Amino acid sequence: MKIGIILGSTRPGRNSEAVAKWIYDLAQQRNDEAEYELVDIADYNLPLLDEAMPPSMGQYANEHTKRWAAKIDTFDGFIFVTPEYNHAVSGALKNAIDFLYKEWNNKAAGFVGVGSTGGVRAVENLRLIMGELQVADVRSQVALSLFTDFENFSVFKPGDHHLDAVNNMFDQVIAWSKVLKTLR
Image 1 (cartoon, rainbow, N blue to C red):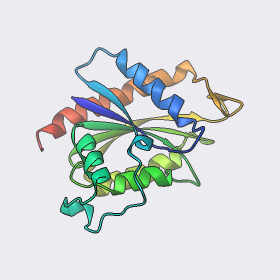
Image 2: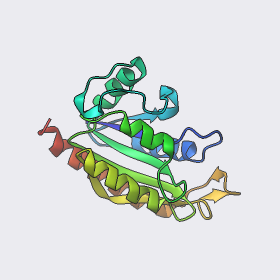
Image 3: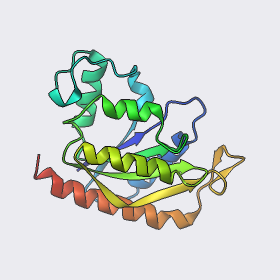
Image 4: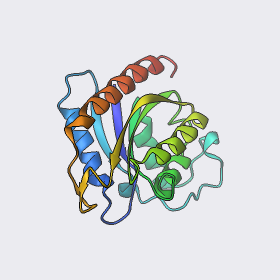
């Protein structure tokens, strides 16, 4: 199993970068059959969706899209680390997701939300998007508060009470990814 940990913000000084690295470090400590990779959407320099054909056609014209598609296609499942901006996912994450279609299909996803209320509304937004992309989202999620899990709203200091939720999410993503692999 190969699980992509998607860092869903490109904002300078983003809090979600420390969160994604924390999730990745916790993944490396697990004794499971999965391989984990941190994928930062900022590294792909995706412009606003600029493909003429709908992603469901799979006819990508631009090199940035082909590179992004090739990376996402390598994964069996995903953990999205998303900030909450105005009760939704970041525009950059939505744009990155919208570039592709079949590369997301029949895979599993878990969510780590970051925001004043734990990013729960961004995660709800992602669950709707994942349904359209034929991605099975798992129930367990991690909700990190800017008020209690960050010092001065910028230095990430998660409480140990999050570890059970993180591990449950990992377990569910791996189990679902394994089963869904038979559909691809």
